[in-house]
Amino acid sequence: MLKHFALADGRIAEAIGDIGDVRLYSAPSDEERAEILRSCVIDQHALSSALDPEEVPRVDFEGDHTFIVWKRPCSTSFRDTVLFDVSSVGFVLQRDRLTIVAASDPPDLERKRTRPIRSLHDLVLRELLEMVHHYLEHLRVIKSIAREVQSKLNASTGNEHLLRMFSLGESLIYYVNAIEANGATLTRLRASVERLGFSQDDIRLLDDTIIENTQCARQAEIYSQVLSGLMDARGNIINNNMNVLLKNLTVINVVFLPLGVLAGVGGMSEFSMMTRGVPWWISFPLFLIALATIGLGTWYVLRRWLDRQLGRSRQ
Image (cartoon, rainbow, N blue to C red; front, side, top):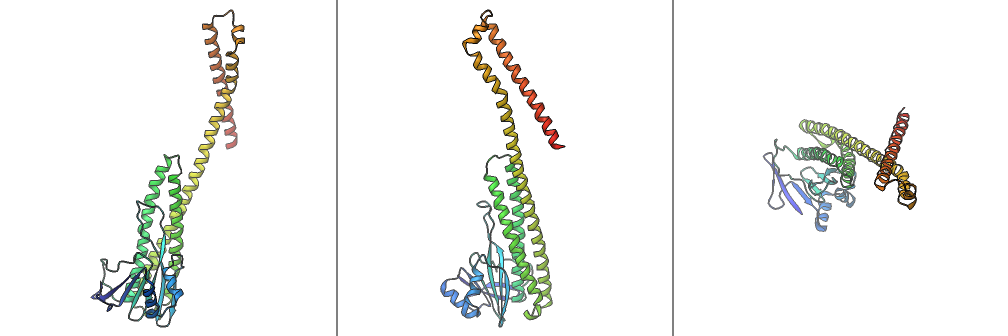
């Protein structure tokens, strides 16, 4: 789908017909792809790069135009999924025209802006900065979701919330990689400001974008490390809880093993023969008391022995 926009009086507005100096392609058809190749004077590989979510961000200077591939976060419904992904968007900046190509979810060029747009260079830089802010918003959401999942994970014995934590960790890895790659693209743009004809205002805006992107990359890396540490700690806690459970089950089995043997003997006729001279209402309660005493004694000895072994292992 193709939309035309015009830059006038410091704002971007959708233009009627094809008179605008900004063209926005969203999921272009075969005919629109052919038009992009013809009007922007780029090859098929460059166009495919702008639509490929796995493409690495870069800046190419060919003839009288500049081609930028940028990684941006995909719009996500936070209620339906926990996996955050990235996609690519392409900018073809020519002398008097800007072409933006996106596979889906195109940028909102008509959104409310706090400052007027001075030029096409300014528009490109502001779009790049807006996508950096989009990353920051997603990072705040990821942090909030991670805290919510962690609280549920502490009270859960299933794998559902643990899998959500893994999905968040995977998303942060994608974000860290994309943001750092965008930083390399910004560095190359900063080194080519004279070739691109950037004004002093454009250079200041580019420097601000580089700072914001660097801080965003650092924040995403910290979140990724914290989440990875939490998942490792959670795995250790699960292993420790399993060891404690197995130890308690072992103690119970050892305690009831001699009791089962004695109870089996007591259920035979030999016990009645051995206690023939004693009334049953005395012999059997005494037998039960003896079983309880043996069981408690066995449990006490085992607990003392296990505590002593645990104390030695800590030393």
